[in-house]
Amino acid sequence: MKLPLLATLLSTVLLASAAEPPVEALTLFGLSARWAKRPIADLEADAARGDAVAQFYLGQLLLTGLRVPRDATRGLTLLQQAAAQDNAEAMAELGRRQLFGEGLPENFDAALRLARAAASRSNGAGLHLLGQLQASGIGMEADAKAALKLYEQAVAVGSPLAMRTLGRAHLEGRHGFQPDAVEANRWYLRAAEAGHPAAMNAYGYSLFTGRGVPKDLPGGRSWMLRAAANGEGSALQTLSEQGQLDASTQRMGWREAARAGNADAQFRLARLLATGELEPQNATESPHHLLQLAAEGQHPEAALMLGDRYRWGYGCNRDLVLAARWLLSGGFRKFGTDNASATISEDPAQGSAIVNWFDDNGGKLKPRQTPEDRALAEAIHLYLRAHRQRDAEAMRELAGWYRRGYLVPSDLVQATAWLHLATTTGSAAAIKERDELETKLSAEQRHQARARSAQLILKF
Image 1 (tube, one colour):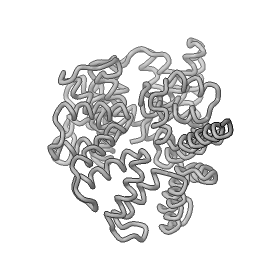
Image 2 (tube, helix red, strand yellow; image 1 turned 135 degrees about the horizontal axis):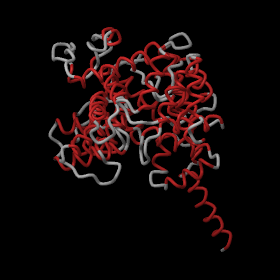
Image 3 (cartoon, rainbow, N blue to C red; image 1 turned 180 degrees about the vertical axis):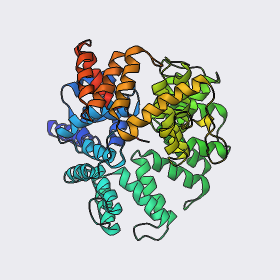
């Protein structure tokens, strides 16, 4: 009797092992499903002990603001720590960010190096990224067939990213395929079941519209709601436009999508909270916090609204430098960099990228009139000099504003951050001023200033 019992127990253990792969083998989507309810304190403890998987996952949470306050600097640091321990998922994510300039300087050589390192470890995200580089001809000759082989290798190791890419390729007739919605949906479903939000949305849309599959409104609605809950806010917009959501369900969906890091959902939720149409459920559900997250996620309207809040000190301390930073980011993303961009940097009284300063005729600029407008234009002028020309004198002047509390809150840490940025230009005056100012800061404040300096200049 003992041997059959032992065999049964052993069989149970083996089956459980097969059903629960080690976390080291999981993709980001797999980790998100496995650790969705894991306490953040446990992740923090594991990351502090040097667990590379915990460092990677916690870094992703910090970068998106999902479940924790967003901290891009620390998030990237954790990804780099994980990558230094040969965590292939972290390597691939850093490579993707270097390719697209997301939180890191755009660097194709670094993206290629990291993609190859991750791919050499049979990592699906790394193989997929290498396929994107191969298809685009970045660092190598463009070759659609070679890219397809890399995507297929990524699928073989379970990459939802590659499954979704093959779905799009079949739907749109890329990589030598003929357009085939039936085959596209086969791939979309595989990616959706593996946890890819955009694939959930795509497959749900197919069910909803009968694109390559029998029409199934309840099934499509279900998949699109799952996509929204995982951060794909456009799914809610589609369902709303088709009259498939009541107001209560839609608002619940925006909340879930906002928590999952979707910038459009964060912006919409911020507006609902600001107008009093929704009551906040917790301290993180404030209009200013959500707008900050959405703006950092490159949402133009959120950046413009956030800039206006900093301009007038609504829900925050008045800070014309941050107002300039976000208004420029939003304006450039909304209207493009061609509309009077040269005028902005040459004459601050005539130009800036602020939405309510543009007319409706192609985004042409309106003139400045009030002292408040002229003060903001001064901040915009200095920020653009720092941004475009890496002008050390402009950076030093902005640092001086924070030292004196001129048009901004008095903040010696922020002043030091601007001086740190100015020292990267080789300015001897900036080095001297920074060293003098650092004597007034604690060790922790000096660390904060160095960390902030990397985030002062946005990529428009």
